[in-house]
Structure formats: C-alpha cells, structure tokens
Amino acid sequence: MRVTLAGALFAMALAMPASSAQDLDVPTPYLPSTPLNVDEMLRLASVTPGDMVYDLGSGDGRVVIAAARDYGARGVGIELDGKLVAESAENARRAGVSDRVSFRQADVLTVPLADASIVTLYLLPSLVRKLQDRLYGELKPGARIVAHDYPFPDWQADRRVAVSKTFYLYTVPARVAGAWKLGVDAAGAARTYDLALEQRYQQVKGAARVQGGILPAFEARVSGERISFILVDGDYSYRYDGAVRGDRMEGAVRWGYGPRQNEARWQAMRIAGAGG
Image 1 (cartoon, rainbow, N blue to C red):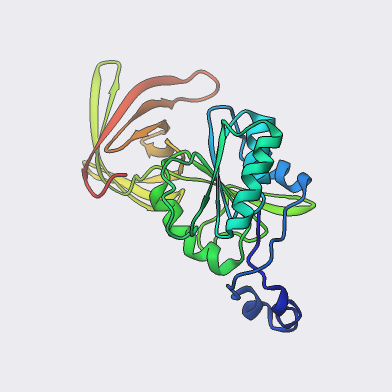
Image 2 (cartoon, rainbow, N blue to C red; image 1 turned 90 degrees about the vertical axis):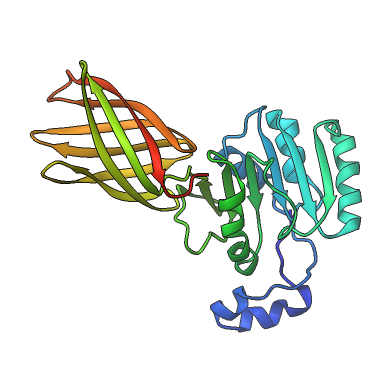
C-alpha cells in the first residue's frame, strides 16, 4: 500500500504549513503500511470471505494479500507503478492466494470500483478529496471504506479508531433523499403520511406531513441499506426501522411505554427525487 509523498520533496513538505504540505500530489516512492496497520484496517472493515476488497495505491499488494490469506476474501490492487504490480503478483503467488487476488496498473481516479464491497486507501488529502464523491456515488449501499490517516473532508466517519495509526471507517449509505408516501398498517387501521427527506451522506433530516400539521423526523439516520427515524404523533414516539431498496423502504414501527411495545409494519414508496 502506498502514500503519495515525494521523497525529493519530503524536507520541503515538512517545512511548509500543514495545509500546503497536505496538498502535495506527486509521484512518490513506495511507503508501505506495516503488518499491524494492514490488519487493523481489515479488522475495522469487518472483512468476510464474501467480500471483494479493493486497495487503492496497493504497492506490493500486502493489503489484498492479507485480506485473502487471513480473512478468505477476494481482492484487487490498483497501482500505477508497473514494477510494484509485478512484485504484487509474485507476492500473491508465494502466499498461495493468486486464485483470489489480482493487480491492475491503473489510475485510482479512473478505474471502475463498483465491484468492491470494501475499499482501503492510504493516500494524501488531495487524492482522498478527489475520491470522496466518486466512492460515494459508485459503491453500492453497505460497502465499507477504510481510510488510513487522512479522512474525507466532508463525510463524517462512522468510526474513528487509533491503534498505532488512525483509521476512519465509512459505510456507504442508501440514497433516501426525496418525497415518499409512507403507509402504516396498525391492527388493520391504515394510515398514510407524506414524508420528505434530505440527506448528506449518512445524516438525514426531514418531516412527515399529516392532517393538521408537520411531524419532524427525529434521530434520522441511514447506515448502508438500513434506515431509522422517530415520529412523535400524539402521546407516542413511533420508532421506525427498516431497509431501503432503491425507491422502496419497508420495516417495523414500534410505539408504547415501557418494555411492552406495539408493533406494526410500514412501507414507503418514493414519489419524487432520485434513488440509487
């Protein structure tokens, strides 16, 4: 795994103000992550045998090789340096995982990423910033991204972990912005709401319109394909939890006092706005 930091400019970068040094984006010598850091990244991503792990700036291939060797996943390394791509392939052969990993000589800013369920990156802020919207837009809901040292500038991490280095975990959220027709079937008594949602990554705000007023959506949040929010109607807090499937959402809503809760099914269809 590599970080874009020019050896010839290293001393100059240290002397610069932090904002200037972080904006350097030039070809650089390979600076590998330690085995400890590689494992912490993969642990934070919760890698499983069913995952496809893409490492952007993969260097000698150690991240995707570890994902395959230690976690049973498949992996793809993206690296500009052809010599490192060849070295990665040989390292994978020696590790006995050549059937589960591959390496591509390609630009991280243009290579297709939609197949990835996990993306790891150790890149300077200039590249991280350029990748933020691309990863958000191209990866499927539920995909995980782990950034080593440098987080996305505008996307709040779901978790921040410091073990020797600092790592940031992001879970790609489903797209829920727009207007929805929300229906609840409680003991045969159907009720509908006009629900409007705004979204910035996993953070959501909005409200439901009912006859006689507006019900704000409290504690609204999206995590992968899961959505949750609370509507206070009358004397009860109605706690919605469900799954997003494109232009459809459905799940369970619970309300009541104490541990004994009422429960009903709910579903919603998007009537305006873009899905994803």
